Image (tube, rainbow, N blue to C red; front, side, top):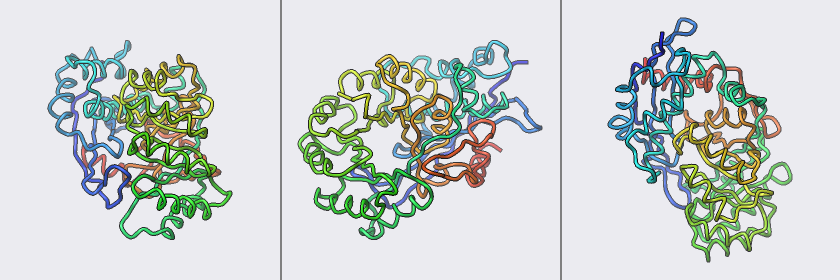
Length: 389
């Protein structure tokens, strides 16, 4: 009997806070929470796949409800399943969602599709009775790597957060087992950012390394000025200095900053990824790629990005996805990527790991939970089940 999608449900949830980066504040930030309800039953429970979009892009309820969910519900069920009919085929589901869509224009549309795609993969792995990371490794003939490097992202600008509070935040991440921490820059004058960086480096000492993130704020002149300032510190990376599509800026900056740089979280297609590698001057021996499947049409498109990365001579070990969510964790473990971002204290309950997963020496070990593993995070699965059950 063919597995069917019997409903697609979406709720737009607030994840607002007073924090800001160099470009935006999060006071009115939202996310879309999606449930893919199937007629499959496992362990006496209907299989429901869940997904949500990464922070930094608003919820996509309108696009999901008006365009992409109806296409799935109107599709021939036989066109959405694999050859056995016993499980959904994510690529066929993706193709059904993208029917009658013109190429290009990857902004909000890619987020809506990526959110649904996450829920589809969660359902597929649950129907298969496997953790998603093991399903991915098995399908691609590789070995899963359950131990994944993770870094702690934070260090936002926040009303009343002085140097002492910033330093205490970063110290807290180190005490929880992280060996790399990240803070925001570019939302204050350069000399103030210098003081913030020096305060954090003094606080964490040799116990961890520091990455900095400008969130695409700088023009070339400012990016170079920061590069010259940052060059005096042993940073893990200098992230997204300019507009994500300004490949010429990224390429030029390499002449001024010999240390590692990172970018890619705001590139939403394999074509954009290919253009970054062609024209962005990225260096495969030291730089990092941060494509986020939840923002870029989902895992189906992310696999096309992986092919682009490999074809350009890059190792997947240079990929550390943005977003801080369990979907990227499964991708990192299933495909052997370089690691994953995490927000230990922010964007809850959507960010982070299952409840009993601890960070040790900058790594976590993936739990053996079917699907993406949302059921292992009590507060999150309560919110998800409220949408579908």
